[in-house]
Length: 159
Ligand SMILES: [Zn+2]
Image (cartoon, rainbow, N blue to C red; front, side, top):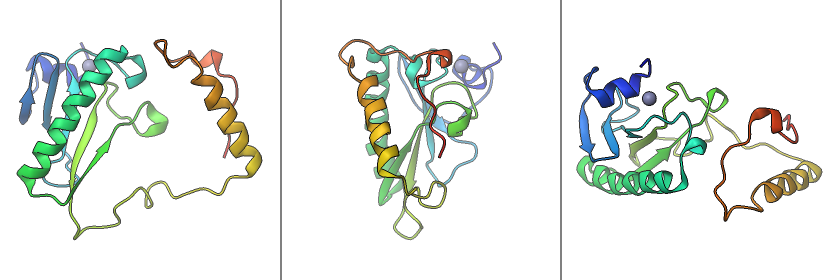
């Protein structure tokens, strides 16, 4: 078992646990963006949120939501950011699903994604192609959606 977070779940690596239940573990990020920055993970190893069964992903987010409220109160924060990245291109470093729950304060800034991911000007054509691709992709959302293998990608967007 090479996964850092699986080792934390197993207790092989120490962590500052703030919450634990049958399926989930929450502990302080060792590189906190703010005091109270917490990681919430499923105990079972999944690399990305897309790999998780719908029910488990839903349950995980319920725990994230409850922790967000508890952490905001405990840290006397003005707001909470919830962040979750999948795969290297998105900035995922540890390949085990995790949500960042980050207390935010009015005294800090900027509050949004502006600094790391500024808005892009896209042409109407790209916007329409994008909408069509996503619309097609979600047409069967009522059935369980698991990620397509990369070989099945239908189009590439290069911005
Ligand atoms: Zn793991």
